[in-house]
Image 1: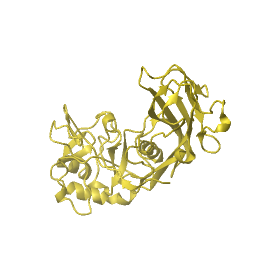
Image 2 (image 1 turned 180 degrees about the vertical axis):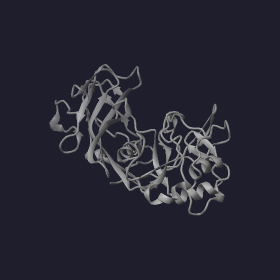
Image 3 (image 1 turned 90 degrees about the horizontal axis):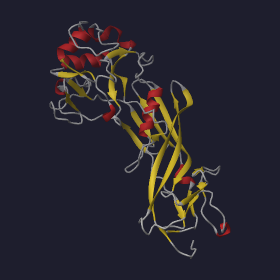
Image 4 (image 1 turned 90 degrees about the vertical axis):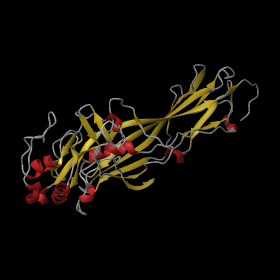
Length: 363
């Protein structure tokens, strides 16, 4: 595996956090707060009567996350997307007790419920949830607890909802991941569709794979000629698989998601053009390369991957050639083994192609 160094992926911090100065050193904050009401800050704000905020995720991402300028895969299956949010364990019973007992103000009991300190002590210490708001169809909304579950501290951890940092704009307050903080066993995932397991981590890792621009080679290089075939190819070094590992250290659950290029599709950007092969789809060869460069021995031959323009661009300026690299995606996880398939993805790169009229043939 290559690529970026390990990093803990955290969501944006916000203006009004817990009164963290009063937290015990060993305790972590309960999660994000919200910005000034109506401020519209990235960390949250007020939308009508609903307060929204983002909590912190402990998922660690390593591998081919890419660098500046890299993009992400667009799933071929447009009906599928990586998860917008999930639930994950984040505190031990002792940490949760210290955080709540130190709380002086408000915190997020759920991603869309901003609650005063008394709500936390009533629900999680004194088993008195009746006076506090719950989310519609919430499984844990009316559940109370005794003394932060300290008497069964070795049997579980406290879980909370977090938002996929790549999909903040898709989160719907009141619809997605609305459960309040709840108790669960990190080795026996709670029966919630968004509870984090290796499959959820694999789908999140899909969002984190960095895909570089599709760098194609052309022969002739630069300006093209009417009725002269342009040979297109990609070298093996540019077609390496990309792998990202997502891991939740607190529970030991991990997944590795791998994207591997399988074909290049050429759209010449003009109806007055012929593509090779006729489908426009150039498969990765057994040698790991797409297409081939032109050589003098190929005189008069059609390219295995390429295009022939039948009209110049003197009126248009240029044609926009789109090179779309298709990637197959699979994952392996700590709980499910593998590999298992995920929807394939596409990454498009465009090129401005100038085509001239000339009787000369220059390679």
